[in-house]
Image 1 (cartoon, helix red, strand yellow):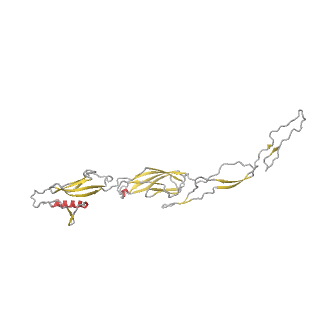
Image 2: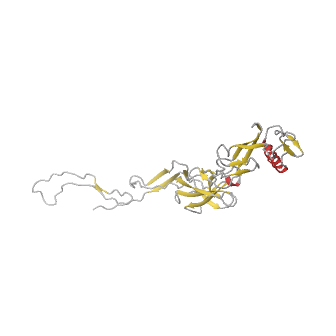
Image 3: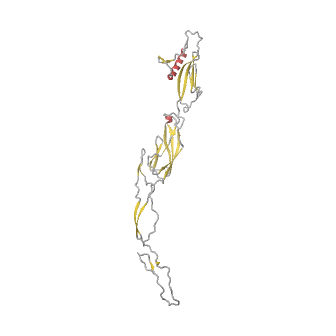
Length: 339
């Protein structure tokens, strides 16, 4: 007869492991009983003798990761011999076998799973350490700039793998623009970009998990390059010579236009939890009608016939008439006496 202490251990172990079995079971008084073993009535002994043997096979025993688990065939106690990495093996699937000592046959075979509990031993890792993007100076606040993504190898859906993104630094800093990041890693900004104030921003992003006790983190860098936009009206420069004698008044229509559409942005009010209030000034007209009155300047007189020939007789009288020349003063508005 089997001692009561051994029988209780056998029933407790089998009852615990049978919950995963697909074999037909008989329930009797809240305990799962396997009726595979036989005891001959009035067996003469000697006592105690071995009725059966428990065998454990599968992951952690004779399959990778090998050598993690073992079972004491006499007591049914399962021992753990070394560490297991959750990221490599989250579940150990084993087979519990009951072997009949009399004929060495496998009487019962049950499935068993050992769940490996995750600890927070992996920091979030960004897909890229450096993000480099270019956006137009005329981009509007709230528009998508760039998206970042970090992955945590710890157990999905747990605080150990839940990631929070945070901006830790922005260079250069300014009052006209503020960058912010959404929970899913989308970067945007509030306010107005100004190429003349800053044509490049360097932003450091932190990804931190929510592990209990110890929170792990990593960082990535975003470089935002601004492309100059058309936010300055054109200025007319240069000069055209004007001649008072030809025309005293001139009328011009001057057109000034850029290839890119004109834009402007000015911050009026700032808010912490939403987009700022900004205004856009309308573009100035692209043409002007100008009337120019020309003032006369003192231009030098000139001869109508700058090179003229005259014939004089030899030994002519002093003071005799030779020829007549004529000079004209171009300043008709203010005639001068010529000498």
